[in-house]
Image 1 (cartoon, one colour):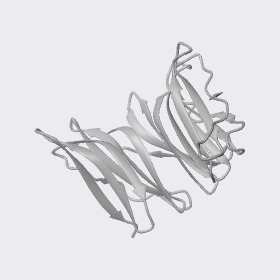
Image 2 (tube, helix red, strand yellow):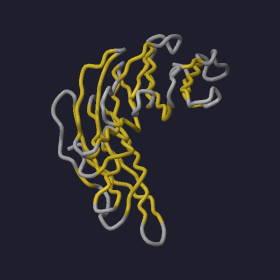
Image 3 (cartoon, one colour):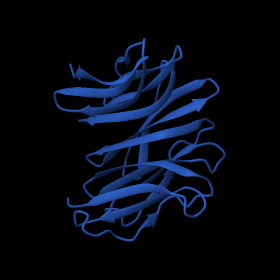
Length: 225
C-alpha cells in the first residue's frame, strides 16, 4: 500500500542498536528514524514483516546475559510501536525470522542449551502472542527460515550432524498438526544457508552445497500433497 519499511543495526552509540525508518510514499521520503532497541546489551540480526497497516520487527539482544528474542509491533504503519520479549529463556535464543499474513505473524528462532539446539516457533496477532511450539531438530540447529501460505508454515534450517551441516525441513500448521520432518540435502556434503518460498503449487528450498572442490546451488521442489 505504497509503504516502505527498513530496519538495521548500528553501533554509533557504542553498542549495537536496532533502528527503523518508514515511508508512506513508495520510498520517495522517509519519516524520522526510530530507535527500537535502546538496550544496554548488543542488539543484532533484525528482521521485519508487514501486512496492510501492521509492521512487525524482531531481533536478538544479550543484555540479560544470554541472547533473547525481542519483538515490536505497530498497527499504524510504524508511527508507534509496542515492545514484547518473546523468548524469556535460560537458553541462548538467536537467528530470529518473521513472516506475516492477514495481520497474523509467525516468528522462528534457534534455542540452544547444554543439551543441544531446537527451533522455536511462535504465532501472534497485533501485540499478542498466543501459540508456541518447539520443533525438535535432528542435529544442532541454526539459520531457520520460514515459508508461509494460507496458515501453513514451512521451516528449513541447518542441522549439524556427523560433522556435516544438512538442511532440515518441517511443515507445520497452527490450524492443525505438524507434518513429517525431512532431511533435504546430501549426507556426503556440507549444506548451508537455506532459503525457502511457498507458492500455491509447491514449496521451494535452495541452499549452498559444499563438496571437496567447489560449491553448488541446489533446489528442491516439495509438493503440498
